[in-house]
Image 1: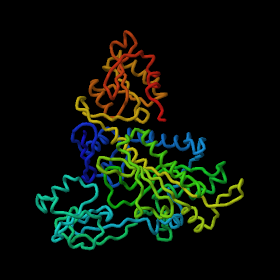
Image 2: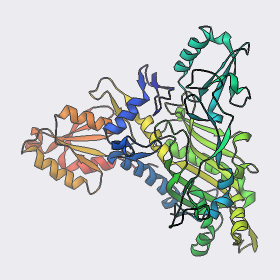
Image 3: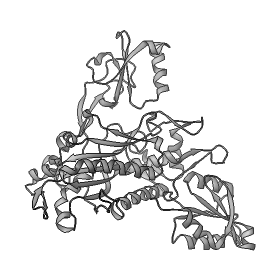
Image 4: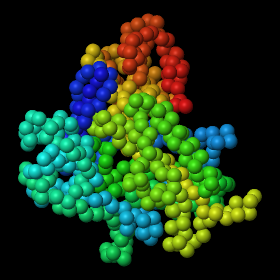
Length: 521
């Protein structure tokens, strides 16, 4: 069993189980992402900016591959519906900045906030709903507070230091931060008790001022979700496209949230990308479509290579439902066991029944009719909406965490076990040496393959170091041109996962890749 000790940007730790018993740090994954060009801190040369990240040459390829798989499965080849026929979904790309009245109607301006507490000693800020308070058995003395996701080992060390070694008999209550005895609580990073303020609401919208006037009357917002752009264009799509209920509108794009405590690498950031689809249906058909999309989305993530043991379908509790889902069928989350959440899970996608909240709200605030007219049945109604909303940024992180595989027998010490269809590079062309005889053949093969596959031509360093690099970036196959190639026109193929090698004819390389790199079904 492999135990991953997760360390994020601010050293949040957890344990992650997979494979055999080897202890590694999440910081090793973070380091690999930078070293091999997957993910960099934004404006890194200036020290970065907390909550913002850049995708490097390989990261953008991986992200685009996941994005394209989602778009294909939703818009190009959508799934078969309840009647066995393909469902109808069209695409959209709406503006990041919309009329600010849209965010008033949607409830974001007035209600899109998190409860926050501040520590007067450390000047740090925490989400109140992610603080756990541990109370001594006798309830006398100070109480210890921890952030959710804090490494259990570090937590216990702090408890031993504070209360002594007999931890199990010392603390009997593990509770959310919903208590009023603030003077007894020692904040997560503080040394003395009573430094936490009472919770207050903090709006998560990032604002801006288009134009030359900077006052509240001209304030606009960077969208916190892509969904509202779909609702604002519902009538435009119905009027301009041949769509009929039930149908969906899909969108992929950037969203922004003013997270107070961005953490866990790219899991919780202030700028991220979403993949959202709004499924419009008749109200009395919402239940069966909700169940349909829950099953579809779970299966889709598994088809991307996430194993069943690391995927969880979790219904929202009543106290965590969004305002638009309180009167409906609720929300199910597709959750993934990230290294920093283990043994728990972190949200990857939500499948919500938004009822008719959004279209009704925009109809009321805009004065525009957003009803759907059912011509065959001669009736008008506001459709209900089922929303599968996935995090593209979090999806990339899940793929990397899932693919990260320890193997102490190889020089790299690890490899990224991506599905070939998702790997940033499908193959590497490696001349054994930089000799004149090897390089021209490698270059010719590269030019032939690049028309069909993303391939890497790697000439520098010894062959072992080049194999190690390709393992770390997750390249499924390496083709080596050597002296035998000169005499019999064969090349060595090396499999990433098994490291086994075989000889195939130079003319069969493209065919070999076509057979091995199957489309994700």
